[in-house]
Amino acid sequence: MKEETGNNEIKPKAETADVGQTADEESVNVGTEVVGSASEARQELKRLVEEQAREDERPLAGEFKLAKILGGEFLTAKIIRQQLWLILLVVGFTIIYISNRYSCDKQRIEIARLNKELEEAKFKAMSSTSDLTEVSRESNVLEMLRQNKDSVLHIPSQPPYIINVPEQ
Image (cartoon, rainbow, N blue to C red):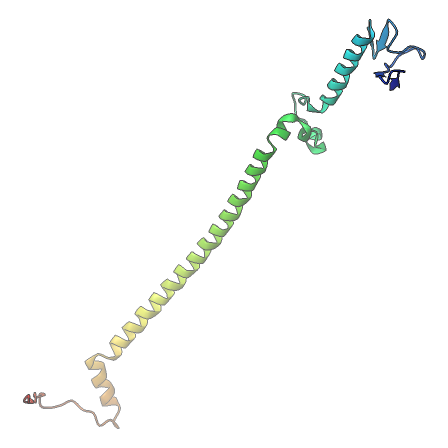
């Protein structure tokens, strides 16, 4: 929509209702507005182009609808694009938080399992110690010796005496 003049100057052609009208004529019809001179037409065209270029940066309507969110229209808003790194940082921290919680839960379950195993081992050790103490009591040993007739062991009738060895 540009026309070239004889002196290597490029001038924009304005959109008009009339086919023969150009930007050089006195009254120019740009879009729906009527502009008086060619310089005003260029300025108006420049303004319209800038307005269309910023159209995607306009804020969204005051209300967020499900269709706009699912359609992804809210992602084109200027505020979203400006805060993209912050949003990615929050998402990253959320992922780290979730994975940390998962690993802590796994460790907590492992600790509970090991504590239960420790309690069982302590109970088994106490039970074994109790059984061993009961079996090794003097009265139980004597009873076992009486029941077993083949044993050469018997209760001494004399008390033990001490042998003194002189030092050299």
